[in-house]
Amino acid sequence: MKSKRFLSVFLLIVLVLSLWAVPFASADGTDGPPTLPEDPDIQAKAALLIDANTGAVVYAKNEHQELYPASLTKIMTALLTLEAVDAGRLSLDQELTATESALSGLSADGSSANIKVGEVMSVENLLYCMMVVSANEACDILAEAVSGSVDAFVDAMNDKAKELGCENTHFVNPNGLHDSQHYTSAWDLYLITRAALEHDDFKRICDTGSVTIPATNLSQERVLYTTNYLINGWRSRGYINRDAHGIKTGSTDAAGHCLVSSAQRGSLSFISVVLGCERLTLEGGEIRTMSFYETNRLFNWGFDNFSYKTVVTADEYPKEVPVSLSKTEHVTVHPAQNVEILMPNGLSAGDLERDIQLDSSPVEAPISQGQKLGTMTLSYEGKVYAQVDLLASNDVEASKLLTFWRDVKLFFAKPAVKIAGIILLVLLVLILLWKLVFGRRRYRYGRSVGRNQNRGYRGRRRF
Image (cartoon, rainbow, N blue to C red; front, side, top):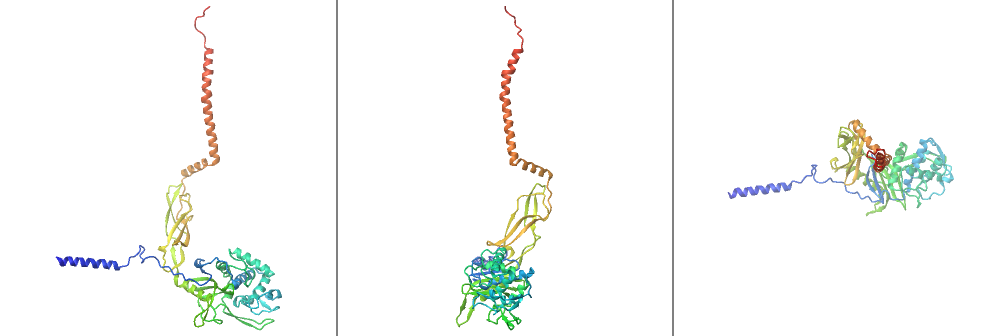
């Protein structure tokens, strides 16, 4: 008997321990909450990583802070030049002559392609000089060609910035040489870069590792190597990124080391901005330019931790919407389209919170199939990942009787009708009171007296 009791207790203990050893699973079948990627802690004054396909922000640090852009300014200069080409005011093969005004006032130790006064060069080759080796004089030559003067071109730069939605940008020159009133932000640089990337010529030129500029009237041919260490290691090795494409470097003492770049791996494509990085001397004497190093780290963090996932399909029916003015009480809604978004690898569609906001509830009939009735927002821990319109799944006819009564109520609910109704009611009350008061008086003093006057005396007369 004791042995049986001991065996039962032993088996019970084993069962409890085995259950304790099994990890508890969450309701969605995963082990605990989703695992989100750790913050990469990018060493820069400001940094930004954007999904180039959707415009979604993947990483942001001080993205709206006003900072000096240095030669990243030249992205805007290239954009305005290529817009002038598209408008027919310039052509890429059009030859321009470097004027003394374009080359005056430039820093002697600034980036240059050694273009001389009177030298003739095509618009395309000036763009190469500007974007590949960051030649300051090429900026001013193009500015004069586009707008007639550098000052007029700067005005156009600021106008374009406002048009693109830049709220923390003010340009003073086309090249980025330091000025306390020449500033922008990582977010604004993204907006400018996004617009520039719509031009195939911009993508081609800024993704050039080296280029040969043909001989001109004042120079032998030039071989130019990019200042962007991500796409060419001629100047410095150790930063090459096979996924990277362009875009522009910039550095001054006040701005630090800055870089706007893009990278693509498979279906993923990113645009990055880093501003205000340092150049460090490590143990052993290695010099590390942090703008390139941190951009590579930012790209790898994005590629390693994010992927596209379908979080909503158009054939889902997430809600029934109440309907008024119809015999049909509800209409179902469905997402306007499939929604595929960039998400952390550890996050699934089932982890996202769905917040449905209806345009009205109930919604009045008639309703047409495909009519927008609301929106659905998908988020996790306060971060919004997607928003999609919700559409009616079918037509809903309105009831003529219910619509009539609705119209009657609306008519009598109008302020003018209410006022008129009150006036009529007051008049009716006054009329009733008048009849009650003055009508009784006539009866008492008028009708009764008249009756006595007309009645003959039938009694006997006395003499």
